[in-house]
Length: 202
Image 1: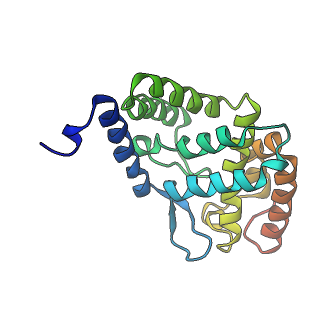
Image 2: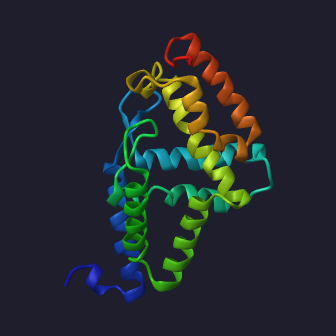
């Protein structure tokens, strides 16, 4: 009998979930780590977002619960274990991606006991909908962090995808909805991206 078989059913289900989500460390993103240039994985991304939200919560446009925002950011990409990561500027079918992510949410959160399954899935759905102050700020952090990654890596994926300033502004506009301050910082980043030749102008 394994150690997991010796656990009470609820605790065993919780450990199945915790063991499964470690797979997020294997999901590589188009962005790179800030200091060593290695591809960032989705678990590293989620941790960095949680820290950004914790440190910069005072700049949210509306009062937020930092605890709820951090939880959202820690779970928001768990679906990528099944659906994979799709670069913001890459070529993919958004409808197919959304369907894959919904199926991933069903499976992964379905590993938890029913009460936690419902609570964590509701939090993930709230993040996806981006209709609450907490979710709007979480989305802002999620869109902002890759900009910093690109700036610390000579433009990162922008030159690879031949991205224009207007394209990146349109694709990360949710930053402004959640935090005007982070959007102002983003505008400085866009300015430098253009001046360095990493972002094209229309």
